[in-house]
Amino acid sequence: MLFSKSSQLMLRHSKKFKRKRVFFSGNIQDSFPIYLSTLKTKINFQKYSDYINFKKNNVKNINIYNNLLVSDDMVKNCDTIIYYWPKNKSEAQFQFINLISCLPINTQIFIVGDNSSGIKSAPLILKKWITLYKIDNAKHSILMTGLLERKKKFILEDFFKTHVWENFSIKSLPGVFGNKKIDEGSKLLVSTFSKNITGKILDVGCGTGFLSVSLLHRAPNVMITLIDNNIVALKCSEATLDINKLSGRVLCSDFYSNISEKFDLIISNPPFHDDLKVNFDIVKKIVCDSVKHLNFRGELRFVTNSCFNYHFLLKKMFKKYFIITRTNKYKIYQAFLN
Image (cartoon, rainbow, N blue to C red; front, side):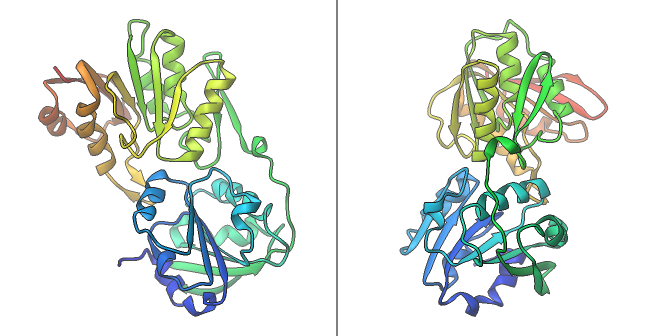
């Protein structure tokens, strides 16, 4: 089994956890929690795909969750936390404060992460609640530990940002694409929307819900479904729809895994990064699998960086395709099934 660099570092300290009740949280990227010998193991995943893949292992004595927030009940009887540091510092603080709001004082916390994730800043970011000490540094990763010294009440609404654009509001939480500002590529895609769009729409990787809400403002009679693999993103999309008094169906789905119907239009601003790594397979899967979920004469419309070329892929999957607009940074592909 191939472990991430952070999990390989954790493996060197596995003896520490044999008599511990461990709760895993954060940016878990592999199946290391299955192989760590403990008295009890609990895991909370942010990504639906990780949750599903873990459940397939059918491991006994491990509780697996896919919850937006950690609760008192989830961490009940756990005496040790293993937290995988994400690449986004505000996301780390968001998750950590939620976590410690449910823990008793003196709970031992281990924080591990890749050097490139910014983990070196963890002691400063978390100093109000825990004093962290580095106990190992290898595999381009760092492992720190400390005892929880203070708790903090967690209020979800405190972490929401609200962006205003074209007289409507976009709600966002840390770690979700578009949290700092509305993405320029998304704005370019929205500029191609018009009142002439009709029927059933699918927003793949909905994030904050910006694309869907923009489309609903231009074409209020469409029926829109928003899907994302990240439960935090789904919460943002729900909040964005609510604040704008708009309706849409919001579903948790790993790409099209929970989608069985067909649509007239699929829209997306697909990422080309998976955590810290470039991953073009995300775009490839969105494009290739879209044909199974498009009606006759259905359309796929997505934004990508101007430097990336998807002509070969689109020519293979679609009868015709176009670049309908572009800037020096982004371009919008439009592809038709028939």
